[in-house]
Length: 338
Image (cartoon, rainbow, N blue to C red; front, top):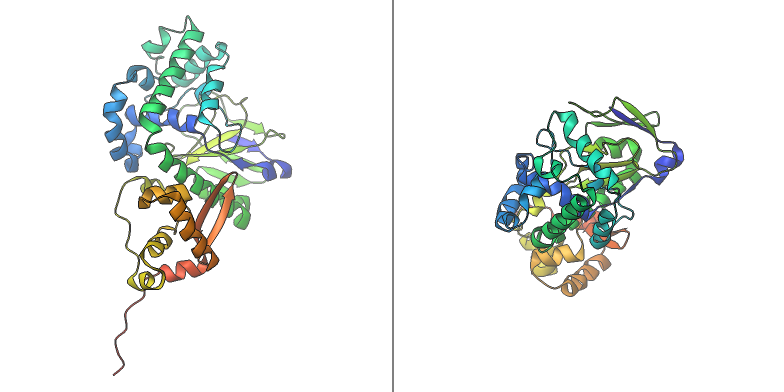
């Protein structure tokens, strides 16, 4: 197990972020025999397979351990901001010290009893070149497979998760936050513990945060919680996001007829979708209209106290207010008393 010791100031400074680079790297689990862990994503990634197979897919799939789907630490550094620019993340990856490449690869595979894949081991005589090849392959994968359609929707899911967790922390405290993230994460007496099973490259460790700020990052490709393999790295926990099912295309639930008569069909549909937080951009994508049109409807619904608005950095998300939620509930139709 790994224990993070958080003082009062450390707990107050704990924050959230998402990372396009992290999602790019962790999504490689979908191509390396681990897709069964993420059934809500399989249909989408099956559709991406022709594009993926045109890339250097041998190099890309070699970056994930087969037994426990670990990835090298240097590919998923802790984000520096709550919503990093992916271009800067790739620039930072390319600026990684080549000296960490071999150690990072060995730490990923050898504790699991796996050899470092030949495609990687054969190239680490020139770690700078290998690092460049990996970064180039990952960026091409991002551009060709993930960025066009998948990322805007995934980003909305991650933002919604962060808004939800922030609200849980504010309303229920650290106990509620950590218990809600994973059953393998526990909080007691200023200690946050990650319970682990299976092999681990170091013994049970207690890591003091000591003002270094614990960062929590939701991911579409985590089915529990994980942290860096190197216990000396900046404290960072990745966990499985909520809302993956919304990434699968399904017909939207119809708005109740009474609600449509009250608000009109567009606003009724919009309000019905906001049982879970969503951004203007995500709503526009789901409804096939412009963000400007969505903004107009949101303004009217919020003025009527049917919506609440939360902000995470530069991003604003909307969801039902208590009144809006009550209006969306189905109500039985009553006949005449005659």
